Image (tube, rainbow, N blue to C red; front, top):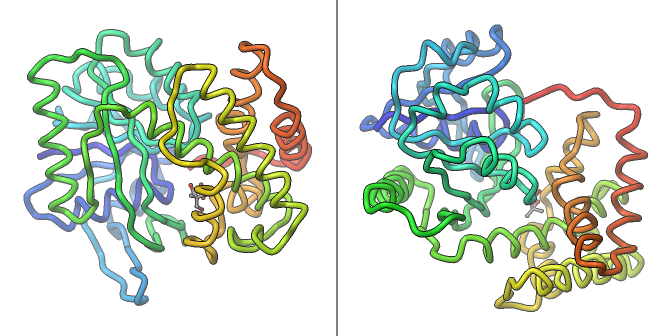
Length: 314
Ligand code: PAF
């Protein structure tokens, strides 16, 4: 199969390296930065595993979407706030692709994509894969977890449903265990509430995920922020299978040494995904007339940190 991955960040590089190591696939990577695209084509993607072994996967990287031939699937791996720019940069590619899968933290990108690609087949994805970008095209794989993909808009054609199953099978065979989920909205909210409870607080406390568990003040804020998010989810008719506060704490323990994506952004002085995470809970809460003071406070505190940064995309 031919895959196009958009965005050379940690997740994009992890997917590119994994699919690129399977000789049955051709992997293209679209990067807005021409110099880095040239470097990635020359160097490939270097993936360091949990045992510190490094492996190189070949890819074809380009800054010009027009040079990419037709593909079987686009994996959109840019950050949430970069989705509109990526859609503009590769418009003809998105229109011609039989399937786009979008993998961001948060929820705001889903509205954007639904509005921008009304006639295209696209699916949302959430992943528990841990990845940290070490440098251009160099990624550390911190740990594996399931990836779930599914259509937000139902029903879909038989051809689209079959294509999604084929992509899930291809990802799984390449090494990223992937399931097709009938209820992807529920998985998106489950992941959103994990990020609501962890990401901003790790950035504010400047600590790894596990550090939140030893701070009573951080745990209190986590409980409040996630409970507000769960009330918003309930207001939208989304049923959560587990206690979301307990889940956020379990994820903190399971990923104790991880530096969250938001703390990585803050340390690298890059724009964060705050609007797509706690900010999205605030927006949805206001629409439903629900009180969301903890999410408002977390959003303002991260925006205060961000106010001095410039956004260097990946
Ligand atoms: O954004 C992140 O960093 C991750 O989604 C998570 C689960 C919080 C682990 O660090």
